Length: 240
Image (cartoon, rainbow, N blue to C red; front, side, top):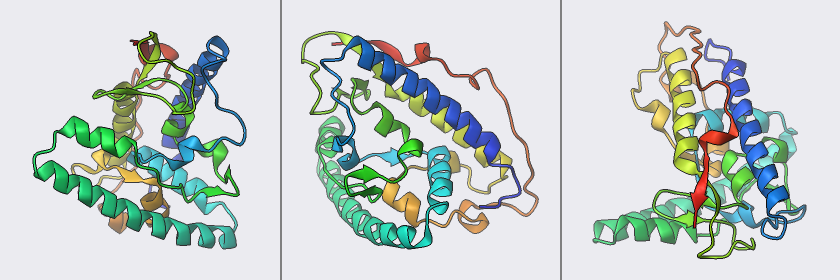
């Protein structure tokens, strides 16, 4: 992916966020060993339906491009099947919303959808070290704004209070980083930084200059902010 900028600048910022998220998860696993059931061989999070920000998608796509060609081809075949399934599910949910079903009920229903990630092969994620942030947090309580959820295999009990990850704060960080990328490539699409896609679409997409709306006068313009060094405090709170 060549947009006339050094994407590693932004990948490094994203990796710092990943490290902060891993720190949160690891601390929860130490503090709540009976509740956090995540372990090698568990694939519960690999069937969840969720979307990636632009920053996450570009990072995952680059790591995917480093895999063996034959392996990539077989994954893309599965990604196409999954993406067709997800498109149908999302269309059906949208129709329900148009018919008057409340948004929080639509979101709750979406959270129950099971769709096998195309990166899961022989019950192993082929990009595990580079997996998205949602995958890294799936086994602990997450505040989604409209509801609090955790992995169905976990031991967290309803009605009890636990430290909870505020996903909206993480989402804000990802949107901010995506905005930095959009500004750096000088895209003609003013809302590119808000784009969200499932893993399947990320793998199938050719993130070239045309797709991203890169103008001819694109230039490298990395930005730094006070949010460049994430810590665990900005996402953890208590939720029952």
